[in-house]
Amino acid sequence: MSLKKDLLPTLLKQASMAALVAFAFAAHPVLAVDPALDASKEAPVEAPKETPKQSMFQVGKSYFARASDRLADSVTVKSDELINRAMEVIGVRYRWDTELPQSGLDGSSFVGYVFKDKLGFLLPRKSTQMSRVGKPITREELQPGDLVFFNTMRLTFSHVGIYVGDNKFIHSPSKGTSVRVDDLGSLYWDKRFDGARRLDGSDNLGDAERQELLNEMSKLKRKSRSL
Image 1 (tube, one colour):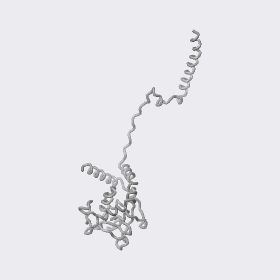
Image 2: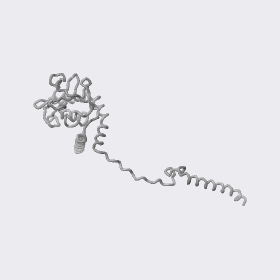
Image 3: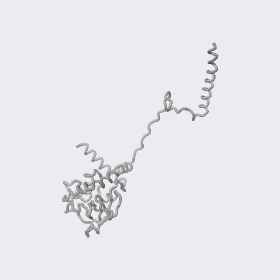
Image 4: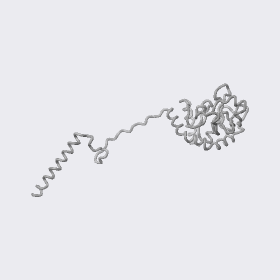
């Protein structure tokens, strides 16, 4: 009996403290324990949020952003390999609108073939579109692997080649000729020089042009899987 008497004040005191704590939590919910931290309670499960779909413009931009560092490094580090690959195509005849050396190459398809074959980087099909890829540079800033453009058809950026150094560039000039090296300082090419670009992964392509590149990339992936 005496033991019960001794315990009673203690029990009453603990009950009072519990009531005070409960009142404090009710009056100030911010003091309550986070349910996520309470193992005895389940936190409400939030429905997973849908990832917003990217537009083709965003997808294209993302592709070029991912490729930018690799491309810039590759053109710089592998410029010798790039030029050597281009030199291996010397003598291949000019043929309009083809993409493989076996059947011939025109001006832009020659450049596109070398970059795709050596660096695995897709360039737009037309030279006018290529002129919007990368950053513009001056003639004095030219380095091997840069693209050089010319006005050969009374149209800006109507022809393209690859700068190889020592004021020379390699290209596929026109019908009846073949891939060869020419001098930028020669009267014909100096007069028609239209600017240069350094490929750094950036671009000013339109949505349709970027979509065309992405379609081409998808075709290549499907083709490689079927081999």
